[in-house]
Length: 104
Image (cartoon, rainbow, N blue to C red; front, side, top):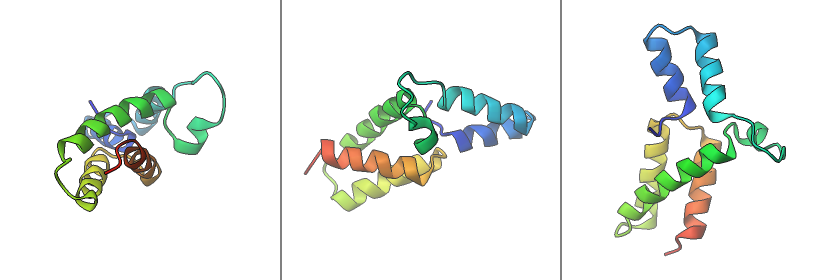
């Protein structure tokens, strides 16, 4: 599943889970401790492992629309990630990586 932390919190709260438990669950999934301690979690709010999984899914979406213009591709990725509840910081990071890894 490629839901972001906000989307997961919302779904858990709709099912009757307390806000504190939902926060704890999303932190456990998205902010698990990375070895290295370079402040990645503090800066992005998501672990490197989770970011890599998300990038892999986003790159599949990016490649599906390779016949479209760059602006349309970017718009689709932004919509796709926003729908899943990811913050703009994560979205912009993914977009930068996609544009550099898959130049036109």
